[in-house]
Image 1 (cartoon, helix red, strand yellow):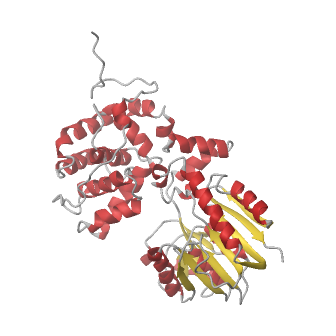
Image 2 (cartoon, one colour):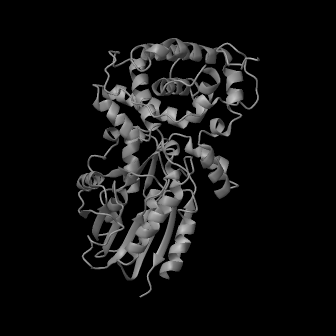
Image 3 (cartoon, rainbow, N blue to C red):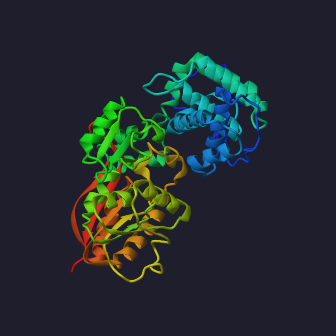
Length: 467
């Protein structure tokens, strides 16, 4: 009887589409020991690698990356520098996860346990940094990954395999990458359904859309025109030695991202952090002094604050998540502004006092497919069926909010999705259902990168209610 061939750690790689064993495609549902203290030096790369790997492994079970990182940090005593390193490694890993997992499938003799797979993925991401200088020497990454594996009970038994896989990658990098990149998931670093959806929605632009989503996001500021002017703030940045470019009426792109504590005037409310595309919302809403305005699904409050920077209006910020709504309050306080905060569901009218609003901003729930460069874990958390489910929820919210709009008032529908089912198709169906007059608005903004135009993927549709 013929024996079934196996892939040896030392076997050569041929540049043909790989067929991974079923064991490499299984669902990962780990019971991770996130509270275990490794004893690694907090300033070591090994410490940051195992922390990042724990967060990545949790993402693969359905936890979003910021929450996963917060859970890791809460169990240890990581310094701000170590937290920053963990976050950087984890985000790099998310942007290259398709490629890394394909490489692991080619090299590992069997599917690794979840934390081992995540640790390998983090290491491979550091050794295959795209279009940039690699952050660490490759042999340092191998040495520190093996050290990290040896320090945790979920990975210690696989220390030898981790060492063998990473050293094989160093020896056979070119052939392994050529083989892995024959798979679209590895080439583009998105699930196959996402790649297919992008092709269907944007047949001329899908490659650029996917590529932009794999880049690091810019740091864009919104200048608070109540406290300073664009010219004055650019002069402030120049005096501080920070290169910056104006990319919108209120938008400033910093050439080099820095922490908010280092941004001149941030603590005093001169500027806020907000994507240039998102900064279009408040001006499009055309709010004037004295108007009654609702910002539905408001958290974390960037659009709420921008509205108040442009007009003396009576603004209600609504969000179903009370914890996230608290962030709106913090932003308002920093900027010296006031709004009514309501923790309630935008599908419901129970919280509404019956007085119509002159303007409604409806930034509705969606797959967030347009902001994956800021949240690279989204692509691995979403499922194909989420688009229909979220579009159905959003349509209910829009119809509910429309009843709260005064005759002659305007409703701005915003979504950070790239999928027409959540954007243009949603807007068209809404207009028909409610006999809404559609006004000029940008429609779909595809994600774009560059000094002159750098923004996320958003959709805008503006409606007016017949008097």
